[in-house]
Each structure stands twice: as structure tokens, then as C-alpha cells.
Image 1 (tube, rainbow, N blue to C red):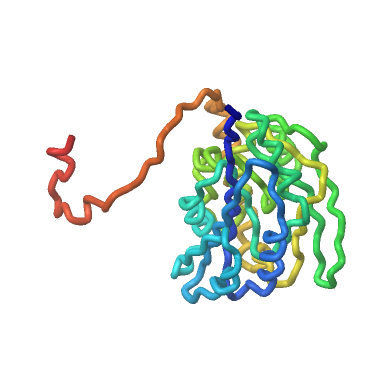
Image 2 (image 1 turned 180 degrees about the vertical axis):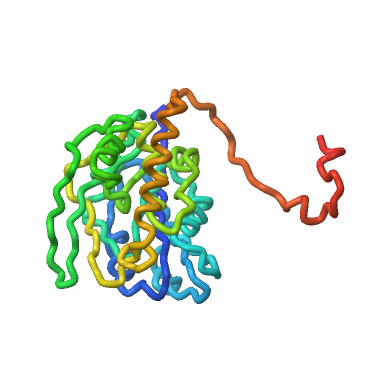
Length: 281
């Protein structure tokens, strides 16, 4: 008898917003053109923020895309976390709806997760300028394995500026969930989450350029709110690092095989002040 291959799945998470979706068609084409390593499947979880959804029709010909709308303006962190509740993959990848995956990106990055001690992976990005030109962005960290805490050591030495571009991260799904998902902040939600995850786990800084980070005038981080709150988000991230180091938190491995858990109706909504849990097994 042949050996059964264990299949793995990647969940790409994209927070979309119709008023800023001018480049989404290019993002879609870049995802469609990806090829996967042997034994991998993919789902693309597109979660649209805003009271007036408008991007679902763009995905009609993408069979592995799974779309849903918030039907309210909840912000990017909440939008990413809502998408995370739908993720069924072993690994999640962040992909903004204006960025581009280069051909071969997933074939290059996903094999790093064959090492059980690698919990996050990032490839290099070129800036994609408004005139279509690409601008190289030098990596602040050496290529190869990155030990726990090394990313934050660099950030601490550089005034709370991080050396990893979080918009291109791939991470083990259970690690993202264990560290609370994206931080509940109007800015730098990805840095807040990654500061904790990378403090406790090792990752890989892949030398290959695997994606393009689009530079344009309507980028979220160029908004007045983002600029005003930038110090706040990075301070929250540093506070997390300090707290983790203060209590000695670490990942020991050897986790249990836990079946999926699901919620039912909110019992307190119909309890009318009664002790609704009594009489239950």
C-alpha cells in the first residue's frame, strides 16, 4: 500500500474596502496565477469592511475565494479577525487588497513550514510606485532563520520601528489565534500581533522577492488618523514585548490535538436574569 500524503491548506486573508479597491483586480490576478507546492491547497478569505459592500462581484470567477461582508464599518483589525474565524488552513497569509504576489511566491514560501520549528515566514518586497516602476527595499535583518525575540530586539534598538514588513507575513494559524489575532487598535494591528508572536517563536526571512508593496496616495497608513496614532500602535506592541519578557512567557511545544470548538446561541440574551447554566450537564 502507498503512503497517504497529508494535505495542508493556506488561508489567504484580505481585508477589503470598496472605496479603496481601485487596484484589487491586479491583486486578484496575482493570486490566480500562483502555483502551490505539492500537498497544499488554498482558500482566499476576502472580508469586506464598510456599510456599502462593493467588491464581491470582482471575485465571481475565483473558485477558491470565500467572500463575506461586515455590513458595517468596523476597521481593519476587526475585519482581519472576522476573516480569521473562517480560516480552515494550517497557515494564514496577510495580503492587502492593493498589493501583488509575484509568480512563484507561494511555491517559495510555503515549504519553509515543513520545519515544525518555523512558525512565520516572510519574503522580500519591492515597492511598486505609482508610475509602475519597482524600487528595491533592503532587508534590515539577515536572511535565514530568525530566532525568537530577534525581531523585537531590533525594534527596541530602533525607537519602536520594526524590521519586518507585516503586510507580507505567513504565520501558523494556531499561533495567530493563540496570540489573540490582530491587535484591537486603529493602527498597527499587525505589528501588535506580530510583536508577541515573534517574541515567542522562530521564523524565516526568505531572501527571494515574493511580493510588491504598492505605494499610492490613498494608502491607509497615509491617513491623518494613522499618522496621529502611529506612536500609540507601536507603543502597544512594545508594551506586549515587555510584558512577555517580564513574565517569562514561552512556547514549549507538545500541544494537544484539540477538536474544533463552536459556539451556540448567547444564553444570557434569553435568560432574563436566571441562572441559565443550572441543570446542564
